[in-house]
Length: 202
Image 1 (cartoon, rainbow, N blue to C red):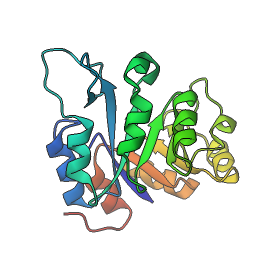
Image 2 (cartoon, helix red, strand yellow):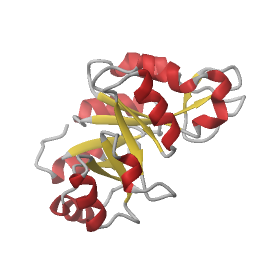
Image 3 (cartoon, rainbow, N blue to C red):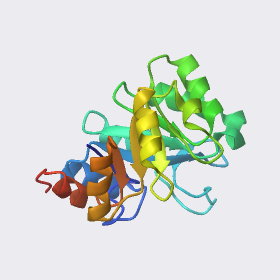
Image 4 (cartoon, one colour):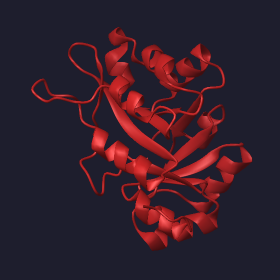
């Protein structure tokens, strides 16, 4: 079971921050998931909401420098079509290592990413106007915990996709999803998830 620290160890520390990413590494999560927008200057910045001009955000480069070689990273591009002029897909793809993955709700950016870099791991979120079949070229399919079904999990598996579910913080629910065949969960509490799945987190 992959334990994916949602925006870092965001149950303990402020989400999408370098300390939250460092904590996820310390705990022993398999991946850190983080959100990326382009700011007004075109910088790739780590934030869930659209960036505000007066706030200071870590850049994607800073986040990847911190985590490179220490943990896998899943970079979610937030509405990348809004930032076409900044070429966010190609720039992000160039920064990722072979152990990292690109995540998106939109199909087109992931198709563009795979065309630029065949073999790149991509995670297609499904269920919001995107069918499971639309994800067939991806590495994994991401399901919302509120909408995932056993049928969907099995469909993803048949298509050769890793079924991942977000965002799961309840321990009982973690066990249910593992029994249903889910390959990984996004969680704000990676320490809790590692304990549930038999690891010995710090």
